[in-house]
Length: 267
Image 1: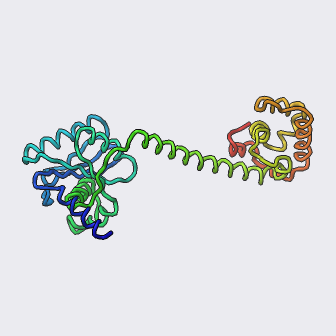
Image 2: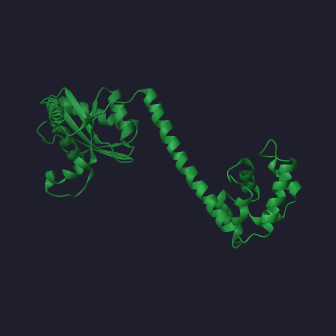
Image 3: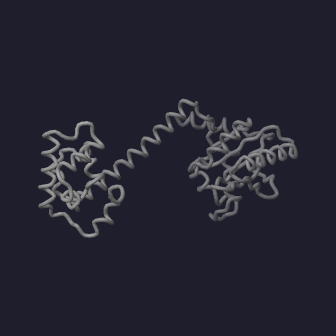
């Protein structure tokens, strides 16, 4: 395994030749900073290339790269950047679309090598760009290639699902908290507090005082807005059961109107 790692490392180092322009980019939200070096680590930019995170900025970067290539007689270019956050994603894909190779550098590699440039762990965008370029020139990078469309669609769906699963769990926890404080007897009426009838109840009359302001017929009528079969003997009995529980509830009633925001807004 170690032999394979050494071989891969050597191949990445050999990829950077005397004709390779190495660009390091420090990625930010609105404005990126780039620096250029040759295979020996000699800085080729008199000042950092600052460009905006939009099409005009991307085109300015490409123009600057082509100008540096022509100036120093280099027919090859590799652009390195850290693979942190998500701000690198658009510029990386755009550069690949222009036929420019992109290399991703591990942020830990950048962190470990900050002092190599000026014997200081201090941070600045131009310095970080140089540290990233140095890492690429020494083979400490991973080649970047855009994923297939199908893979990217799956990744987006998985990410979205994870987001909504987490959000759903938080909302359910808030509902449990509400009931524990405001209406602890509620679970005696519903085995599943996330059933259709229960959710309709929590949406329209979540507090014991709300229930006591309604008749059983009114409760069934409100349920009909959310359910196809809200009434019958079962619906009427459920309404009467809820009213009985609400009448003898020991739930806290202080600041009740304000606290209704906890389960989705005022009612």
